[in-house]
Amino acid sequence: MLVELTWEDVSIAAWIGVRRALRARMRGRETFYGVGSPVFDPDIVGAVGEAAVAKALNYFWLGNGSALDYAGDVGPFHVRATEREGGCLILHDRDDDSAQYYLARLKLEGLAPSVELSGWIYGRDGKRQDYWRTDVRCPAYFVPQAALRPVEETPSAA
Image (cartoon, rainbow, N blue to C red; front, side, top):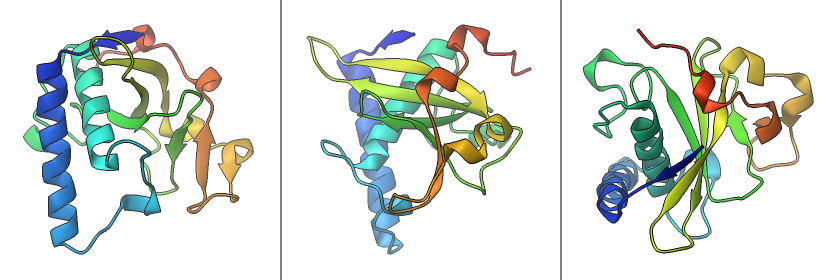
């Protein structure tokens, strides 16, 4: 599913990402799991991905994660974002098995930014041994896009 963001959407998400990055640096954290982005700070990439999922699922997004007693990034949902065309949804052992995780891929070509929502998966379904990789900086489960369920199959969060 392709989500078209306005430049205002991206601007708000980028500021939220910058705020997250600054807060993390103030606490002495350089990057989570030691990842980086070729274009944007990982906090900005994540915030833009969250904004796209919120827009697609018609959720009001505050950009501060667990606001309003929700456990996810967007309401009850968790978002993983990437700029890589063939990027995987990355899960870690500590991730909630019963939560839904969405993969958002930022696409910045063209006149307006767009985000490809590659799909979603429950944490328990993504933590398969055949997705486990140790040849990366931080071992994790790398769920391929082909294993994700379509965004249109999102169950009701109510």
